[in-house]
Length: 59
Image (cartoon, rainbow, N blue to C red; front, side, top):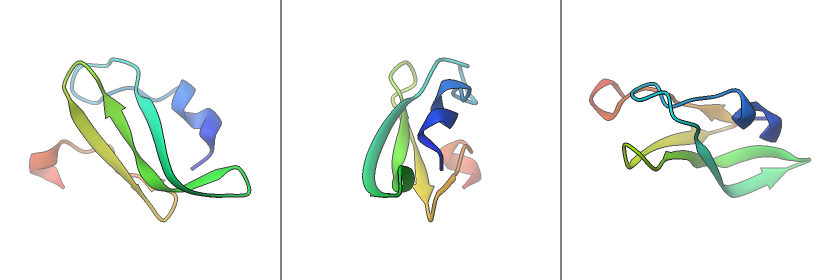
């Protein structure tokens, strides 16, 4: 996932901005990590460079 992408993403539940937490990075792309919503206290995983923006009950 491109790091710049986080600027246009929002929590699918409450629409608040998301915080990017990077666990693994390659060539300025996020390979593994998560997007965090402080309002919902929800984490959305990034796996193999793909953000999974589904609520927990739909993953």
